[in-house]
Length: 307
View 1 (cartoon, rainbow, N blue to C red):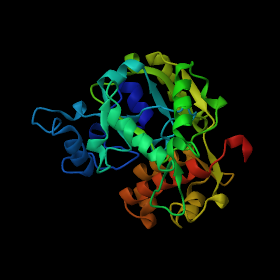
View 2 (view 1 turned 90 degrees about the horizontal axis):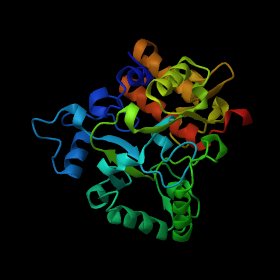
View 3 (view 1 turned 60 degrees about the vertical axis):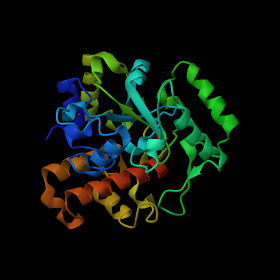
């Protein structure tokens, strides 16, 4: 019944899906599950010998190529850690997710990124969009509309500059294109974290208090990005399905709006009072709906002060 930030505060370790049973992607990190199969295919069974523990499995993130306040792949969460550069030395990378059937041909390490970047450049040359299974939506590659190779190289050059305070930028809203990172080995909060960037929706909540405590205990700065907020009445019914407006009204705050904190409260309520959600499906089905509402919020939401 602990929240994610409570677990991080207590342990000082970023744990993987096989340890926590949690994921903002496919909740299938168990023996014989989809995540288990993807890791077997991608890493040649290296994590499937009898002496490998759950804690030794990879941790997942994304390689930042464009500095957005909401991070390189907000599809998977409203708050994120920026890891220190040295962590890249024990990480692997794939263009798009490890669930992609082409992942094993698109994998690399930080000093051998040829296959990863070739796949990215090929997509840019083909028009710079991905086509998720939610027509008529087209996702710009890396969140950059009309991306060209020349523009990509210019953006990569900007990474040499010092990191800016996240609220100063325009969100990328990236849902469908990323260079996935698989971190091999431990991620210790007191050694490996450069920044914690959190959604401002949590700033005046108990979670916000715990996030401050986390940064103080383990010695990294806490920064806030504006996050996203959307009136339930403005939630479309053609992006993640017709149930989305109904769900937004179900969990919206006193002003009839949803943000990351509202979705978080709903997830806690689902875990603690599952019977109140029976009309919406079982726990896995409701989690899927809440995840999809988060996607709607990332794509259509605005900074809180604008609505």
